[in-house]
Length: 246
Image (spheres, rainbow, N blue to C red):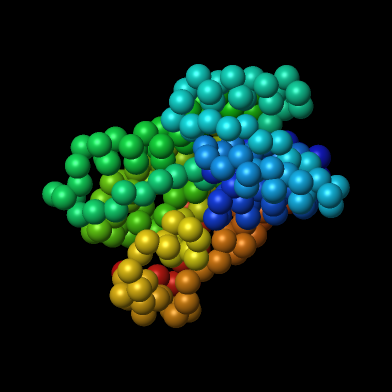
């Protein structure tokens, strides 16, 4: 159960992050959502959950802004006194082949995907160590596990998060922390709207289920990992890709 747990979710107004935030809130967690753009969407989510008696608070800022991350976590601790769950979901993509990827795109993707995950872990872990418990779930990708040639910077940034996940888990498991990663395949969200149908169809063709994944399925996996009942899972990358073959 996660009732009354305090959960921070980054990238919480779109796609997977939105579904994760809603899933945790509707299962009793007090959710702090981090978002970068749409105030309108954040307010809509908050109003919808509040009407049903669920709790969510939003903070607007960039996950690669170290000062924003620090002050936000300090405010959360001041208000709630603890952070039980951290879901590092915020991410961007600038897909291209390695020799066609410009330096700006490399930097933007790494600073947001890896940098954002690092900054939140860096700020949250000391509090979790102090309370001798905590659960961190980092969102990566099958591109981090399998490698996909047209997602060079994205796959590398997510692969770096896999390494961070395993390293932090080894260090902080003795302090009561569980740290895992979830590696979704091609999930039907706003992020893939620009992907040509030919590429989507090719991905589906090489997937055992012959289908795209749904954000709600990823949210269910996060909920599973977030529960104390499943406390033997740690230092693991959970692939959620429909059996993607290549």
